[in-house]
Image 1 (tube, helix red, strand yellow):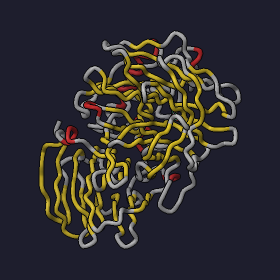
Image 2 (cartoon, helix red, strand yellow; image 1 turned 30 degrees about the vertical axis):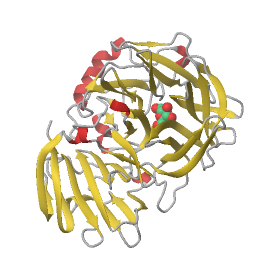
Image 3 (tube, protein in one colour; image 1 turned 180 degrees about the vertical axis):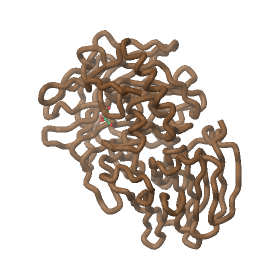
Image 4 (cartoon, protein in one colour; image 1 turned 60 degrees about the vertical axis):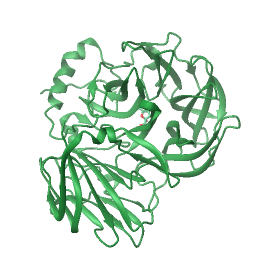
Length: 476
Ligand code: FRU
C-alpha cells in the first residue's frame, strides 16, 4: 500500500475516510496484533480517556492519532464492551475541528450526570512559544450522540505562578460538589496538582494547588482520584523523576498515593505510596468505577517516545486490560477480574521444566519460591525474555535483553524493583501475542511489557527446575 504524508495537525475530514479504511485493512494483517487488548485500528494510541460504565456498557475512549504510528493531532477514539474482553470499535468520538482545540483533543475523564456522560478534555492550544491551557467539555447521550459544549472552553487560561502546561482534567463528585484535578508545571518547573470546583460541571472556580509533600518532578500529567476499600487513592503521572537502582526506571513514572484527601485544606495525607507498575510499557493510567461501583483502572500500554518493531505495520501501542483495584497489606493491587478470566477456558495443567504452548494467547499461573524456581523464561534459547526473583537480595527482575528482536534500547532492556520479602510468590502471566501482563501475588506487583518474540503461534516456557502450574488458553 502507498502511505500518504499528512501535516502533523491534520484532523479527520470526509476526504480521508477511504484512505483510513485502506490503512486499517493494511494494519489488520500485522502479525503482532493482540486478541483481547484494545489497540488502534491504525496509527498511534496513547492514554485511556473518559472511562465509564454507562448505559449498561463499558466505554473506553483513548488518545488517537489515526494517520501514522507517531504522536500527532490527537482525536478521541472510542470502543465499547459488555464483557471487558470483546471490544467493538465505535465512530471517532472527538475530532479537534474547532479553533479552541486546534492542536488536539488531549486527555480527560468522564462523569455521568442526568443520564448524560460528560466528557472532559484538554483543548490543546499552542502558541509560537508555549501554550494557553484550555479545558473543554462534550456530552454523550444514551444513543451515543456526542456534542461539544457551546461555551467551550469551560476553563480558559492558567492561574498565577503556573506555566501554560496544564492539562488532563479528572472530574469527580465529593461531599455534594464537583471537583476537577488538573496536572501542571509551575514557573519554577515543578509538577503541580490544581483543584477546581463546580456546582454544575460548566462553571468552574479555581480553588488552589493540592499540597502533596512529595517530589513531583518537573510536570504532573493525568491525575486521578478514586476510593478503594474505604481509602482515598490519588494517581499521578510524573515526568522528571530521576532513575534509582530499584525505582523510576522508565522515561516517565506512574505513582499511587494511599491516604486521605482533605479538599478543605488542600492537602493529601499520605499513608503509602509506590509505583503503580514496574514493567517497561506503562503510563497515564486512568481510574473509574465499573459495574457495581467496582474500582478499576486501564492504562496506556506504552510510555513516552518508543520505537517498536510493529511501527512498520502502521499501528503503535494499545491499552492494558481493565484491572480491578484493591488494597492489601497497605499496597494498591491491580489485578484481573474473574469476569475476564472466564474468557480463558481451555484449561491445562503442567508439571515439568519445559512446556510448549498451544497458542500465544493464554493465562499461565505458577509459583516462584526460595526452595524452588527462581526464574521462568518465555521463548527458546536464542530468543527469550525472563522474569526472576532474587530471594536473598529481595529483588524482582524483568529482562528482555535476550530477545532476538531488541527494541526501545534507549530506555534500557532490564527493569528491577524491590520484592515483597516473601519466600514464595504466586505469579500470573497473560500473554496476548506482543502484549504481556505479569502479576505477582494478585497484583501486589505488576509488570506490563511488549515483546516481539512470540509471534510464532507456539513457544516454549522454561523453568530452572520442575514446575507445577496451569495454562488457560483464550478461547473466544
Ligand atoms: C500523557 C499525555 C497527556 C496528554 C496526552 C496527549 O501521555 O502527554 O498529558 O493529554 O498524553 O496525547
